[in-house]
Image 1 (tube, rainbow, N blue to C red):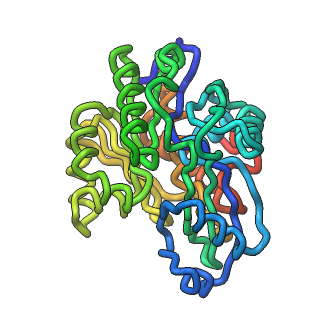
Image 2 (spheres, rainbow, N blue to C red):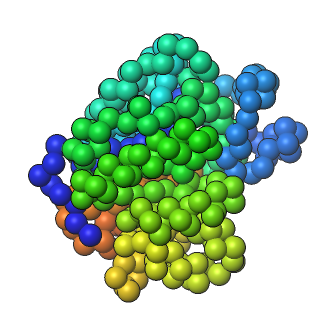
Length: 328
């Protein structure tokens, strides 16, 4: 697999446009509020309001899984842009400003009616694990009309976020972006996002992987959920038979890349302490995609992913605090 370096963009991301609210909480906070540790749970407006009021002070920053990945690519020196839906409200302005300020293109017009801009309430426990409760707001209403064909055709890789796969119009938007990319001879990529997403969409995603996806990103829980097994190696072999490249992360155990019958096991970048695991998978994808855009071997792509993920877990928040290009 080789990305085309002669195009205007290395990657375009398609996903939810979300502002993250992140707080450190004790373990019993999760129990008291009925939260499933480590999961991403979709919540409504009422739940978002009450949970936000209960959370201790934290930080607010633009996020969204695929948007974090695009920010990481830009921090590494790559050329990225993002397609996601926000309202013409304060958080929509925050998202657009943060995204552009991070070197990522963002040109989707603001919606003038409908739900407000999305936000994700993230609780980080002392072990660094993050639990996400997400109000998708207007972001879930991304539709094929929001997909700019010229932008997709100008990108070597189209990177789509599994979290977005919960409404029919959003599914149609992802399929439309993938079709444009495939017809133009570009690389189509999907991140499985969360094991609970896999549970909801397993059959549809099986078809999607078989039919449209060249490069898949997943962690060990997600790939095992896809094939309803506890055997990571068996699940890895199965997903590798469906796509050209599978890039699978295993937290402290590093990552596994499978392609063309080969397997590469790449160690995680050592860190002194995991502060917040939010964004680790997103930033691994950043490094991998950036390496792919440079044409380096897949094993080196995974090493770059580990470096980017290693930086983001050492502090609060899902985006780099240093220029990632300085680390490689």
